[in-house]
Structures are given as C-alpha cells and as structure tokens.
Image (tube, rainbow, N blue to C red; front, side, top):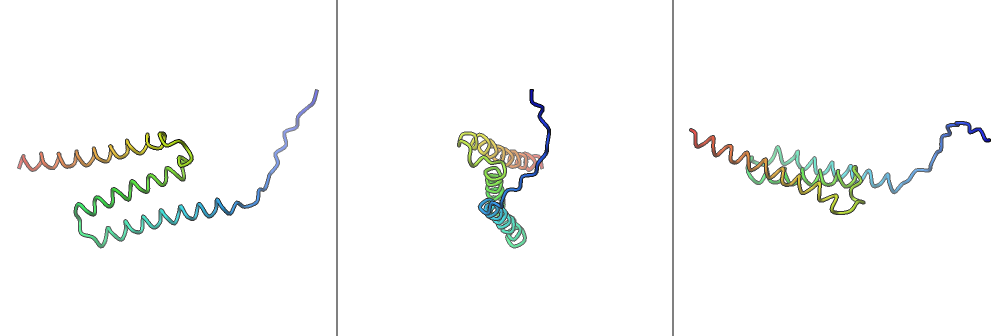
Length: 109
C-alpha cells in the first residue's frame, strides 16, 4: 500500500504572448467604443439618432464581452443567439413601453 503525500508545487508556465495580445486587443476595442459613446454624448444633439447609436453600441459591447470574457465565441452559435436575441427583444420592449407610456401621458394632459 502506497502512502500519497500532499505536496503543493508551483508550476511556472512561460508567458503566452498570443493570449496577452488578445486581451489588449479586446480592451482596446471596448475602450474605443466607450470613448466614441462619450464623445457622442457631449457633441451630438439629443434625438433619435443619438439614442439609436447608444443602443447599438451598447449591444455591440455586450456581444463582444460575451464572446470574449464569457468564452461564448468558441461555443455553438445557438447558445450565443439564445442570449443575444432575448437581449434585443428586451431592449425593444423597453423602447416600446417608454413610447407607449409617453403617448398615454400626453393624452391625459
């Protein structure tokens, strides 16, 4: 009968330059989208175009975060779409509710 000893060893792996480049690329893309949203917020007039751009860029960032950080980019496409499609419908629902709510509010006055 052998007695196993619990030894904790630290294994040092060499740096994976490809993964590091991918992380910096992801951070750069998310930073660029955020900077674009920030600039649009202070330079464009409030209106339907600005709101549409904000919603589109936010969905794009959410998609990119899900693909990269949640590792759904390597999964099957139905799994990815089962998350994105409900998100799009949820955003549509919020817009529709806000529109209908404002219409009802305007009818009362």
